[in-house]
Length: 383
Image: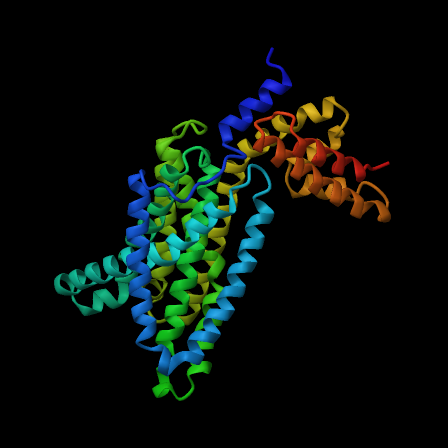
């Protein structure tokens, strides 16, 4: 029978938990592909903004500030749900930058424009107005964001190990894509009414995009990224090509449905509203299901890493259940004591997470950091 300590080490190895991401990799061809694609996208975006900032600077500044706050809130939310084998901050930042500049300005805008021109020549202007967005964006935008997850898989093969990693990195790619795309939409709406009310027209676009943000690019690319890891497989994730292709196609299908709502509605406002609500609910149902599927191995890894601490009396079985469970288990644990004990229990769970991170970083070995973190955990002992 495998010992708990051996299971801990195997879980750390399998998930890549605690491994660091090294951005500078001049001997890795994927690094230069990343730099070239992001560099071109940054140059393109800078040229576009530079040509309009003198006239529409207030609209650009307002949209940038609002979406910066939106991005920080999403980052906080992702940090809250990524409570198992956490991704290095630099890896999430690299995914965000790829989505913001590489996928958006290098891949999507050029691919979409070229394919729309082909549709117009072959099928006419009316077809392009109705079906053009739905038959271009799902291909180039989802594949463009997915290419970022693929590159990061080969830039950080010791970190990106599970479908859950693909889910999180895909979400960050989608966040970068969405923020830069939405700023572009706000900038494009500023000249309406001859630019006389640029703040009003751009802010109306900003708030409309904010309302649909969580049900669009972030969601699609999270599902696509998980599917990509399932399709390719890693040392820590068995290949499931059928599941991977299904998730990738689902992401593209959701994107198609969203971009084609006007064509399906045929001018009916009631039908359009019903489609928007229905597609949003469907998208959330899919992303929650994918999250639950991909997070299960992460929870098992957390249990394996921290089980020896229960044997040593550092944690209780209830605390291990809360640590490796979902929000219901955590809420049940926090509310198990009196009102004065609730905060202590919350701090104890946070300290236990820190201990898990330190154990993963050390490969399960006893180090000064591990011992210090364990002593901090003991300070919040619950009676």
